[in-house]
Image (cartoon, rainbow, N blue to C red; front, side, top):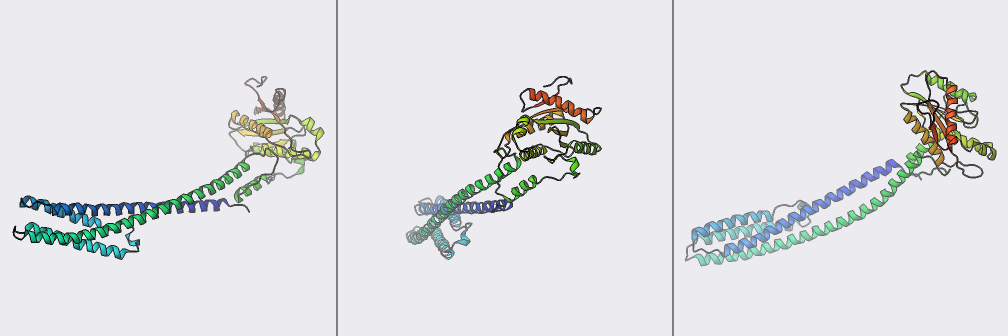
Length: 397
């Protein structure tokens, strides 16, 4: 069953969304761990502040008052930081326990702060009594701090475990998705490459995706020629014959175009040997495939023909000679890289080509004869190449 590129990319987008959701959840967990750690730091700082208040020397009451009041203010702030809501508190199952611990911490902290202020403001005679009362509230306060610290450590450990599980899940999911879509995207690339390239081994292109399969089949379907009269077509290749070429040329010549007309003439280097060794059906299949390769470079104002001499004429409307020469050379290279199926098995063939600019004053037939002279120079040089005229008409390269 062929795959759907649309479905592949839809699933890819969905997978990336799932990964993004997982990464977002992991980020929230890390933020939550940071907030729990800040709570823990605030709780530990309360230990230090309590010890500083208890050990305060009251010999200098004025200085002690300033110092203790500063510690109490810091203590109040630390308590607020200890019970500040975290990002995921609303999702914690033991929210009632957290509320209970927070209320107990606020109550014991207030009691200790009040006792510390009474101790600070007490007379020397009653100072021992008030200090004893402050110590009792301190013990209760430290107990509540310890309970809250244990609870925060539990929350941190839970969050770390969830974060670890999330990381492992994201790694496994990401690895599976990478391997899966690496394979799927390679399939798409291979299908696109098959659709865009000329077959070099004569085998039928096997594709894996619906859309590329449709494109390959559509490209393989021969476009109907506007004039369907059999008298205008070559019987073996189905391309225009000489009469059909002149008809198409005159029809397209009437269309205004700013491009120049270049004539490229191609001939099979091994034509004599092939025609002697292959059947008429094999030669027809070879001609049709050559026509398909040349047609890959056809533009709307171009005309392709198969002459009775078994030469292929490509009338190219191009902006410059370099572009026309490049297309002609690509045709020669594509034929060289291709394999042609015959009853005797796949064979290789090469083309020789000649290209020149058709001047407005010259007739098409005489220009084709001139192109044949240029093509002969390519054959004399060993074939499998494209020859062109230099600036002077009697020189070639």
